[in-house]
Image (cartoon, rainbow, N blue to C red; front, side, top):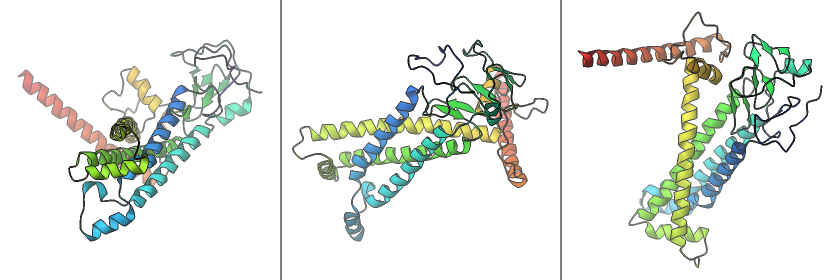
Length: 334
């Protein structure tokens, strides 16, 4: 059976009048505004990194001369070529992994092969379950325990973790590892951008290096540019704010997935149990609970034992923290 794309006249994710379509990848219409915003942020950081911040790192020839004279300052302890290479390396990984994650088709291959006629009348609004007892009411097919129907992409996804609006695709078993590499490289690249932007503004506020700030601005703008110092500081401030926002957001996301990794849980599992009031204290070792969304990260028995030991240390640390808090509460009540 052929599935058709959504008509261009529709604007909202959940105001669709037909189920006869599904999104094959992140660049399949309809596009999400967050996907466009992602590329805008990437372009801003790349332009700011190579077009502005790196100009305040001294050139290799000057670096060697200052190193010979032992004139080490905070802003010139690195060669410009080093930062050029590191920037290119991590930016390449960010762009490559972003495109690869978005272009990966995460659909359940078995459901797609069956190609059954879809249910056109089933409600596709939020908070209404689609997969119940292993049966998808839209695809009209039996699905595995780890498969979930994504309402954004309108397809059954094998090993579903969550839908990422920044990449306009589902994060699942097929692209989860690449997604983790994407957020790690994004965190490193944005941290480098933030560090260079801070080093650049430090050159201006340094009493002995303020002239170097002007010389670096002359590499970027024409010396006859009016208010060149104001423009330079404004761009510097924008890069600091954007880089800091990316570092905080991506860093929080990275540590959240590290926590899920140690808890051996997926995002959808964590959120569903949080809504039910379960696992709130990270007590995820419930033998009576059949976890339909848990994914085996390490099929290798030795690696599974290593991660099992790390998880036991994590549980022990959580238990010690709870006992300490409970003891403090009891002491305060007495």
